[in-house]
Image (tube, rainbow, N blue to C red; front, top):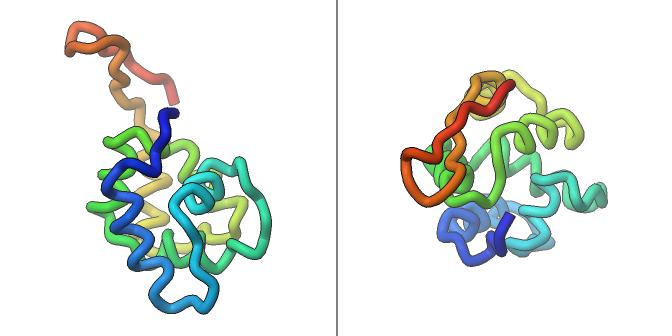
Amino acid sequence: MENSVHHQAIWRALTTVNAPLPLPIDAETLLSCLRLENRDRVWRPHVRAFFREVGLNIIVDLVLEGAVDFDSLAQALRFWDADEDGENARWIREMAAVPMAEVDGSDAAGLRLRHA
């Protein structure tokens, strides 16, 4: 994935995630936790806040901007023990299970189906 900290959605997510917590997390660290590149448990409250509090519209924007994908989010739900029955968790699991079209090239002719 490209340098995702330049995407707008991560900054909107951070305002929600950092609001109630004494130790702020930065964009790069949050994204690395969502991709399971960073598994430092000190960030668990932040990741759980992401899954509980961030609006679905922001999560969708993160995926559409290429910052993270639904498969990674579903894996992060399990790893960070955030696999709850909340609306966001259910929706992410459903989206990860559905084959999605991926762009392979610069136009719609380059679409191919991702197998779940």
